[in-house]
Length: 124
Image (cartoon, rainbow, N blue to C red; front, side, top):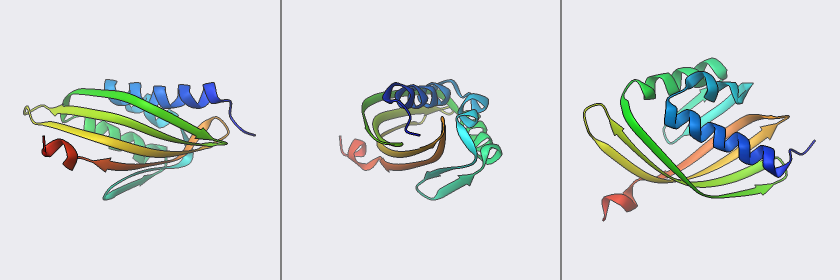
Protein backbone atom coordinates (compact mmCIF):
# COMPACT_ATOMS: atom_id res chain seq x y z
CA UNK A 1 0.00 0.00 0.00
CA UNK A 2 1.37 3.37 -1.00
CA UNK A 3 0.75 6.21 1.42
CA UNK A 4 -0.98 9.28 0.01
CA UNK A 5 1.32 12.24 -0.59
CA UNK A 6 -0.51 14.32 2.03
CA UNK A 7 0.07 11.66 4.70
CA UNK A 8 3.78 11.43 3.91
CA UNK A 9 4.10 15.22 4.12
CA UNK A 10 2.18 15.20 7.40
CA UNK A 11 4.46 12.56 8.95
CA UNK A 12 7.55 14.55 7.95
CA UNK A 13 6.06 17.76 9.36
CA UNK A 14 5.19 15.93 12.59
CA UNK A 15 8.80 14.73 12.81
CA UNK A 16 10.03 18.29 12.31
CA UNK A 17 7.67 19.58 14.98
CA UNK A 18 8.80 16.89 17.42
CA UNK A 19 12.46 17.87 16.93
CA UNK A 20 11.65 21.55 17.39
CA UNK A 21 9.67 20.83 20.55
CA UNK A 22 12.05 18.21 21.91
CA UNK A 23 9.12 15.79 22.06
CA UNK A 24 10.72 12.34 22.12
CA UNK A 25 7.37 10.58 22.65
CA UNK A 26 5.90 12.16 19.53
CA UNK A 27 9.01 11.53 17.41
CA UNK A 28 9.44 7.88 18.42
CA UNK A 29 5.72 7.18 17.87
CA UNK A 30 6.16 8.01 14.17
CA UNK A 31 8.44 4.97 13.70
CA UNK A 32 7.79 1.26 13.25
CA UNK A 33 8.80 -0.88 16.26
CA UNK A 34 12.11 -1.76 14.55
CA UNK A 35 12.53 1.58 12.78
CA UNK A 36 15.96 3.09 12.18
CA UNK A 37 17.27 6.61 12.74
CA UNK A 38 20.67 7.13 11.11
CA UNK A 39 22.81 10.27 11.17
CA UNK A 40 26.52 10.51 10.38
CA UNK A 41 28.32 8.46 13.02
CA UNK A 42 25.20 7.17 14.81
CA UNK A 43 22.45 4.59 14.27
CA UNK A 44 19.49 3.92 16.57
CA UNK A 45 17.18 0.95 16.02
CA UNK A 46 13.77 0.61 17.65
CA UNK A 47 11.37 3.10 19.14
CA UNK A 48 13.02 3.06 22.57
CA UNK A 49 16.47 3.86 21.17
CA UNK A 50 15.03 6.59 18.92
CA UNK A 51 13.16 8.03 21.89
CA UNK A 52 16.40 8.12 23.90
CA UNK A 53 18.28 9.80 21.04
CA UNK A 54 15.85 12.73 20.99
CA UNK A 55 15.66 12.84 24.80
CA UNK A 56 19.46 13.14 24.96
CA UNK A 57 19.51 15.84 22.27
CA UNK A 58 16.70 17.84 23.88
CA UNK A 59 18.54 17.85 27.21
CA UNK A 60 21.33 19.92 25.64
CA UNK A 61 19.36 22.19 23.27
CA UNK A 62 17.72 25.46 24.20
CA UNK A 63 16.34 26.30 20.75
CA UNK A 64 15.81 24.41 17.49
CA UNK A 65 14.48 25.75 14.20
CA UNK A 66 13.88 23.72 11.06
CA UNK A 67 12.80 25.07 7.69
CA UNK A 68 11.66 22.51 5.14
CA UNK A 69 12.80 23.50 1.64
CA UNK A 70 11.33 20.57 -0.29
CA UNK A 71 9.89 17.09 -0.05
CA UNK A 72 10.15 14.74 -3.02
CA UNK A 73 8.01 11.59 -2.85
CA UNK A 74 8.31 8.36 -4.84
CA UNK A 75 6.02 5.58 -3.67
CA UNK A 76 6.68 4.90 0.02
CA UNK A 77 9.91 6.87 0.06
CA UNK A 78 10.59 10.55 0.44
CA UNK A 79 13.60 12.79 0.26
CA UNK A 80 13.50 15.88 2.44
CA UNK A 81 15.75 18.91 2.23
CA UNK A 82 15.69 21.15 5.26
CA UNK A 83 17.74 23.80 7.00
CA UNK A 84 18.46 23.09 10.65
CA UNK A 85 19.67 25.46 13.34
CA UNK A 86 20.06 24.68 17.01
CA UNK A 87 21.46 26.48 20.01
CA UNK A 88 22.79 24.55 22.98
CA UNK A 89 22.19 25.48 26.59
CA UNK A 90 25.75 26.87 26.63
CA UNK A 91 24.94 29.19 23.69
CA UNK A 92 26.74 27.37 20.86
CA UNK A 93 24.84 27.53 17.56
CA UNK A 94 24.97 24.87 14.86
CA UNK A 95 23.58 25.38 11.37
CA UNK A 96 23.25 22.70 8.74
CA UNK A 97 21.62 21.83 5.48
CA UNK A 98 20.25 18.34 5.68
CA UNK A 99 19.08 15.82 3.08
CA UNK A 100 17.01 13.03 4.58
CA UNK A 101 15.87 9.81 2.93
CA UNK A 102 12.75 8.44 4.62
CA UNK A 103 11.17 5.01 4.05
CA UNK A 104 7.62 4.22 5.16
CA UNK A 105 5.85 0.97 6.09
CA UNK A 106 2.12 1.33 6.57
CA UNK A 107 1.66 4.77 8.09
CA UNK A 108 4.97 4.73 10.01
CA UNK A 109 8.59 5.60 9.31
CA UNK A 110 10.75 2.49 8.94
CA UNK A 111 14.03 4.25 8.15
CA UNK A 112 15.20 7.88 8.52
CA UNK A 113 18.68 8.44 7.04
CA UNK A 114 20.26 11.91 7.26
CA UNK A 115 23.10 13.39 5.21
CA UNK A 116 24.19 16.55 7.00
CA UNK A 117 26.24 19.47 5.61
CA UNK A 118 27.57 21.75 8.34
CA UNK A 119 30.66 22.92 6.46
CA UNK A 120 28.88 25.20 4.01
CA UNK A 121 27.67 27.36 6.90
CA UNK A 122 31.14 27.50 8.47
CA UNK A 123 32.47 29.16 5.31
CA UNK A 124 30.13 32.15 5.55
